[in-house]
Structures are given as C-alpha cells and as structure tokens.
Amino acid sequence: MMRRWTFAQRVGAGLSACLLAGLLLLGTLLSAVYGPPLTGDTGHGALPQALLAGLLGLAGVGTLGFVLHRTLAPLHARHEHSEQRLQLLMDGVTDYALCFLDRHGRVTAWSAGAARLSGWAEAEVLGRDADRLYPEDEVAAGVPRAHRERAAREGRLLSEGWRRRRDGSRFWAETLLTALHDGRGRLRGFAEVTRDITERRRIERAQALFAEAGRVLQPLSGAREVGEALTRLCVPEVADACILFMPSEDGTVRPQAVACAQPEAACRLWEPLLRCPEDGEEGPSRVVRTGRSELLPELDVERTPRALDGTAHGELLRALGVTSALTVPLAVGNRVLGALCLLSTGPHRRFGEVDRAFMEELAARAALALDNARLLTQAQDALELIGVAAHDLGNPLSSLQLRLWRLRSLACAGEPRMRDGLAGAEAETRRLGRLVHNLLDLSRLSAGRMVLDTEEVDLAALAREVMDRHCEQAAASGCAVTLRMEDGATGQWDRQRLDRVVTNLVSNALKFGRGRPVEVRVHADAHHARLTVKDAGAGIAPEAQQRLFRRFQRVHSGAQVPGTGLGLYIVRQLVEAHGGSIHVQSRAGEGAEFTVELPRIPRVTSCLPAEARA
Image 1 (tube, rainbow, N blue to C red):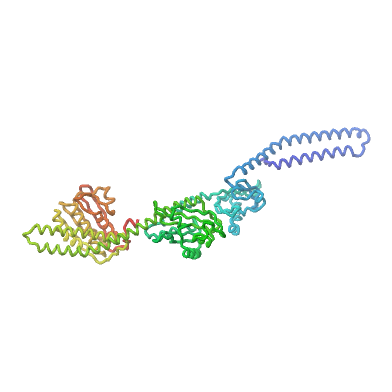
Image 2 (image 1 turned 180 degrees about the horizontal axis):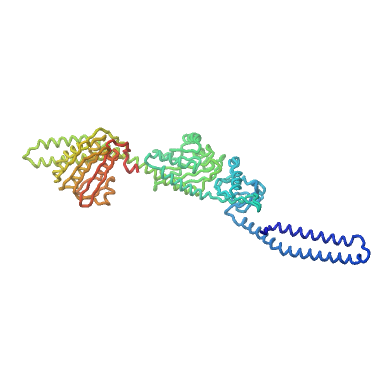
C-alpha cells in the first residue's frame, strides 16, 4: 500500500530533488570549463557535449521545478486555508474557551472565547501552564496534571469543577480534554474545550434545594424548628452563613436561628447579633418593615457602605468580613413574618439578581411553612382546650345521667308522659356523652398524647355490656338485635377505648338500620379477634366508602340523621392505635357490615392520626 505523505514531507522531498539536480548541473559545467585541456579530436567535441549536458540539466531542473510548483501549490493553498479556518474557529467561537496545549500542559493556542471567559489575554498565557485556570488548592493537589494523564490514557476526559478567572472569581465549568497524537501514535499535546455552566448548575441546585425544602420545611415540629431547618438548608449550598430574623412581641427584629459553614464561627456570629439588636432603619429590620429584599453584591471587608456606618447590621458585616450579602423577606400575602439574611465571606461567591429571584421563591415557601407551623400550634392549643373542656364536662354529664336513671326508676307507672320524657332526656345525655368522649379522644389523637392502658379484655363480654346499655335504643328504633359470641376472644387491649369502638358501631347500626335487624358477632383465632356489626339499613355507596373514615365526613346528610362525622374517624384511630384494622362492606339499599380485626397482642404503633403519619 502506498504511503500517504504529509504536506511538509512533500515539500522537503521536492526541495531535496531540486538541490540535487542543481548540484549535478553545477558540477558538470565546472568540469567542462575548468577541467584539464583535451587533446586530439576528442577535445574538440568535449566542450559542446558538456554544454549540451548542462542545458539538458537546466531543462530538467526547470521541468522539475514546474512539476513541483504544480504539485505543491495546491497543497500549500489547502494548508493555508485550513489554518485560516482554524483561526476563524478560534476567533469566532466566543461561548466556549478553546485552547491547545503541548504535552507538558503549556498553552500553544488561545481563542477569543478563552480570553473572554477567563480574562487572560493570549499574550499572557502563550507558552505558560494552563494550571492558572484551576483553583490554587486543586493545583496544589495535582488535579490538572492528573486530568492530562487520564486524557492521554483514555483519549479524552469530560470533567466538571471550579475554574478561576483573572480577577480571582470562580465559575463552574465543563471541560472536554482531548489527547492529540501524530501519525506514529506519539502524544503531541491536548485540545481543551471549556464552557461556563454556572447557571445550569445553579438551576439544578435550585431544583434540588426546592425538593429538599419540601422535605425539611415541615410544620409538624413548630416555628422554631422550621426556622432552624431553613438556615441549615441554605448553608453551605447558598451562603457561608445564614441568619433568620423575626419580629418579637414588642416589634423589635431579633435573630431566631443561625447557621454557619464552619461551626466554630457560629459563636462569633451570635456575639455581635446579641450585642447590637436591629434598630429598624437598616438591614433585616427594614426588609421586615418594607417587605422588599436588599442586595449588596460586593462589599469591602475594610470599609462598609456609608449608609451602614454606625448601624448594627454594618457592624455585623464588618465583624464577619462579609464580601456579599442578600436579605429577603419571608412573606405570606401582605404579612411579613421575618427576614432571611445570607452572607458570603469568601471571594468565590457573589450574590446577584439570579440569587435574589431564587431566594425570594425559597423564602416564600419557607414563609408558608412558618405560617403553617403557627397555625398548627394554634390548632393544637385549641384542641388542648377542647380536650380540657370535654374532660371537665364528663363528670357533671355522668352525674346527670345517673340522676335521670334514678328519676326514671322512681317514676310512677301511671304517669307515662313523665317516664317517656325522662327516657328521652337520658337518651340525649348518652348522645351528648358520646360526643364529649369523641372530642376528648380527638384532642388527644391530634396532639399525639394518647396512651393505651392495656389489660386482659374479653371482647364478647364487652360487646354484651354495650348491647345491654343500648337495649332501650334498640327497642325505640324497632331493631331486633342478634348476638353471636364465641368464648375465648380475649386480648391485651385498652378497655375504655375499645368500649368506644363498639359503642360507636352499635349506635350507628341502630341509627341507620331503624326498623330492621342488627347482628353483632364476635369470633377469634389464635392471633386475632374480630368484631362484626351488621345492619340492614340504607347502605353506603362505593364512592362514599372512600371517605367514610375521614374526619368530619358524613355519608347521609339531613336533619333526620344527626351527627358530627367524628364517630367512625375516632373508631378507625382507636383501632389502628391497637395495631388493628377496620373494613366496611356495603351496597346502597342493602345495609352495611363493619368488621374490626384486632391482634390479641397489640403491636406498638403510633397514636398520631393517620393523616399525620401519611
């Protein structure tokens, strides 16, 4: 196979041939002119022969030169065209930094994009190491050399990392380093393409930070815990230090939470904060008052802005050596709940308009979490008040029920109106008692303070007791009650809470199955006990069964079926607190069957509502 010569090799071969032909011609002429005289007839013909040979040599050299010119001129033009195109590429691509390095990492070509991106002109970098683009700590660790060695082994290397500009600022770069080899496979250098992907990385970090914020900014722990989680979320991803300011009862804006990239710096941060509370004129206090964010993109460590001279915020910036600061409000609607102050103490981070927009969005989400935490605290206080009130109402209500029962037992048989009135009043007090107990259980469940007091309980005996208490309600409703009990359905349960479960289910069956039979069954196996309450009433549509056990949900509306929508919700919570489950089977017009399954030895479960656990 014929070997393909390069342009330089062809030029060298042509020049060598011309030089050789010229030397031969010159030797021939010199031999003919300055050689020894020729004698005889031979001498008379030697000179013309030499001249003829010289002319033929000149003709050969001319022909060879012409052939070389015709052959090499297109190659030369093509070579110049390639160099021009490469130069146009180097000068025309300004969004990427293009450069060529020798095998030792020294710059041999530097594009206009590289000058724009890095700040170094071509004259400042040609012949020098390209390591100046890397941060000093990475250069000391040998990262640039390791990248070149890996690219030489693998052919190319795609990497991401911090790069340094001429002014000392940093940008996040994506770099493609490609090894260049000659025809013999020897390493000649590297081609490096670099682009600034700081904004792309900022967007990716923002998306990740928003996702993390949705996880950590939960209102279940309270406003203080939410504030601490917010400051920790911002450090070190967004800032070197973060302070949450919130107004106190007297209107003074004070720090509530602090986070630093270096834990030992937190003490240095708290000291000026506590010594110099915000005065309401500058910094976070003004952000809280106006609801508008404030950006200080560049600060001189030695001199603070004139507007901050003599202020607590200015002293704080000076004490920490802050180089850039951003303060955004935490607002919900027209209410400003506080201000989040982000501080940068190094040259690598400068806050800008993109950071302002990003942090304002994050602050809005954080403000919503803080407001939800406040509302949750208020709701818990209200539930605690409901629990206290329900507990206090329980004692007089029990006394009232006992007095009504005694009065009804003393009523004369000849006065049916008095007897019926007392029976109705007693039924109303029982209904009121169930409501009070439901409210008490609701407050304890919502606050997560319900503790099960377990003991050995016979589920069949408990069901009989409940049915005995409801015999008059069953008679008034016209329901024939059937009990089917199996002995041995015992387990470790909370008797009082289990009594509430059976009472609510039986009361619902008598209320919605009026005039029709009601069946109560208890059976057990080695591990579980089951209670089934079945009525033949109006039934429950399939779409309504999905929300049947939710809080304040009523399937049948109207004055003829009074209720609050708490009974089945409380039943489900109490059953699940025992580690059990409840199910319903029903069709519209065919009644409903509720089945409670309880482990005979309850698993340890949370007493939080199902909504909170989800």
